[in-house]
Length: 599
Image 1 (tube, rainbow, N blue to C red):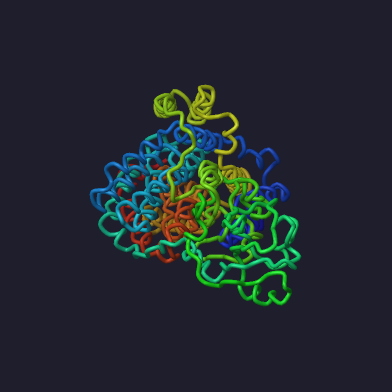
Image 2 (cartoon, rainbow, N blue to C red):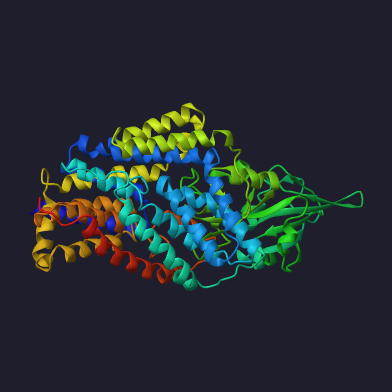
């Protein structure tokens, strides 16, 4: 009995840590696996078996295959369709956005699909004068709905199918999810067109990025007098940031009776009488005037145009989910040296940070206000570390290989759907051929796989092993108690109970982790009823991906949260009714398509 409580304690602790976001989710998962091995609930081989699990291998393959579709321009073609046909009305535009991203997400990484279409929607919004926040929630929700349609659409679908196979049942095939998934997707699109988009408040963004990022009180103009200790030294060596806490954004210097504009670099030499536009706390500047090392000349409000002369641009850049910068600060990553841009401010959710953000660990979904030359902003847009939302610059595409990439993806799906190859073998073979044919660059493979997701899934899998009947039997013990309490109401009520519980926990943790946690329990509950597990497992797969209630429940939501100028409750307001609609549809459809049959 004690081992049941220990397993439950580990599970609850993991849930609390997932919800608090104090520690990274993948780190929590690995800690769970290590704890189970140390306590002896799983063997070493079982503890690390997640890394060789077919579902994990398939997820890796899908990341690579998705990158091939992006690199060859296949995904861009979808963006062009939205540009071409989506401008006739808000209804058609919302329909096009959701259908396009949903179709993409059914066969590729849904976060990648959102990232590809994100810059396009900003351009459409500007051209049509249609609020961008009316488009970004439909974009994110559409990607989540599309993932419900196929076996490879989202990790929970794969994980649930693998769990069935591991327990002696036939796993779900490629399009077994389609009957329920398509109905749910169509219902979700109709809801967003006729109801959901009207629930999104019009929160127009200020045209001035300096105002959006609250820089009004942090931009000033100063002059370096002849006696200043900062003159005749480079910006890097004069310690002006360390002393006063501000960043030099622009240098104006009189030379031969002409005004010269200088874009600051670490090795730029500061000269007497240089006029600097700086970012910093004005009160600190005023206090430090008595040192005679700087003279404050202007505290007037500066606009974007003051910072964007001489070929300089301001842009918003969203940190990608698989960015290698995550976990380290702007200073530690030396972003100025890496990309040639200066980060002026940080927006994290609804919080804008102007002071001290340079030393905060970077998180996925962070929005940076960056300043730099056009070439530097272009390099930023081409980087896998960022999505630059206000321009349509793309990595050079190998469009001639687009038909080849599509053919490889089609054959991969077909071979798995027909049962010719296991999905994991088909996926890795497809990724191998894409790499061999140049649709994917070998050096980009590791950058395109979201390793945090892989470690999260692999780390949580041993928890399911520890709960099975060959180990602690905790899943069966929990199932017996649940069936005792709810079983008298019948399997449909139990189906709804499992669905609701999974929906709740997937709002605070990864959908993959939610599927891995609830899947073994649902499997044991079906056994307690003496029924085949398919309807219960389908309910877990669907509900694990209904991440509509909060912006933190899925990376796709996080990607649009900051740049869409949303508030937390916007997702609750729009996502709540959608979750209820999907619950009702699921409870009607699942027992019809997957009837309650005895074992």
